Length: 280
Image 1 (tube, rainbow, N blue to C red):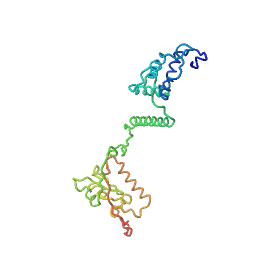
Image 2: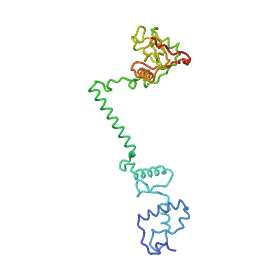
Image 3: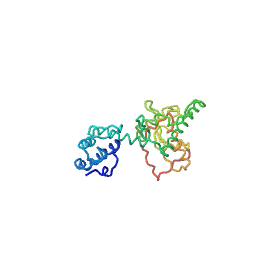
């Protein structure tokens, strides 16, 4: 029985078509088995009108044991495990080149194109950096300081270094009032303790603000009554006065030389007790 193509008088298949047929036959071979495949008639070899010869069948067997080299379609390599990793890599390269993620000349992977959100973020970051550099250059030129004289906590090393905060009792805090020269000078405001040793002339013995040292005298920061108001009792103060105390706390937080060293456990205020006296 003649193959269908030869019975119809079809022209012999060209060499390139034969290679394609071999590749298709190999795929069928994986699905149906070599034995079943070789029982089928073949087209593309020998003279028209004659059955496939044993030489043609042997050639087909050889082709079924090879695969096209992805890097060179005209070359075939053995379909064995040793070449599997190479073949997978070559197929991956082809996919990358087709998708535009790899340069076909250099073989280098190109960067993924940024989407609208990525582009917007990149532009924002870019111009923020440019603006910062221009501001620093202007500050150096005009004020002689790239940060325009700012010395707040955000440019202080202590802000970014890890620190261990201590919890004081009122009795322990009282030991740091500056009378012991071997101890630093501490004060507290709104329960937060700060080291003000850098300004001993003000907070040390004989200083104008020595009454703030070694205690939490939050109330006196806004009333100015140092006789009765050196206490953390804020009863009777209005909202504006409370905000003023918070402003003082921020002053110590942002000060370039004062350090936040801990907190103090303040005793609770008895609501039945009288408010601090005002006759200072």
